[in-house]
Image (cartoon, rainbow, N blue to C red):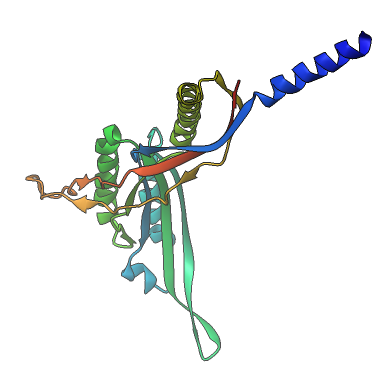
Length: 241
């Protein structure tokens, strides 16, 4: 009697296990993410006159320093541009193995990061730097390159959303499999895998039409960039009984 019961229990257990259908599938989902952040490095450089100036008086050095200090005073409370380091150093050339000072060089740097709504502030900074450097013949202000990109914070936010959408997609697929197999299908295991993002496409800015006001730097029209495509993957095991 005892043996018969054990055999029956073993048979039932085997039958229940055999009735489970496992379906393994790779799922993916794609989202387009617009580039929302502008990045630019502003530089002020030494002019040709400075590069040919073999000696600089204390007055000349102080004039350059005062210009840089004026720029730093203007941007010190800026929410979009940080930095302001600068240098004035001798410029050397090598001729016939001999080191010869031919002049001086100088540089000033600002790193800027901003959104569309702050483009007016960025243009105001450019205009101020242009006006101030024009007063100093030793300095030159090249128009900086502006790139449009996406930040890591934006990527992390969309990654979290994609993972949520993958789970929803897996749940929907489980319901579909339930109808196809006439069984109750559920997610037994889901592994959210690595995601991939297309390489950023950076665009330079273009100048707008000239302003009606004289001696003012033209506003720069912010560049447009192609949306990123981000793909998230998941390996799912469905259990249907």
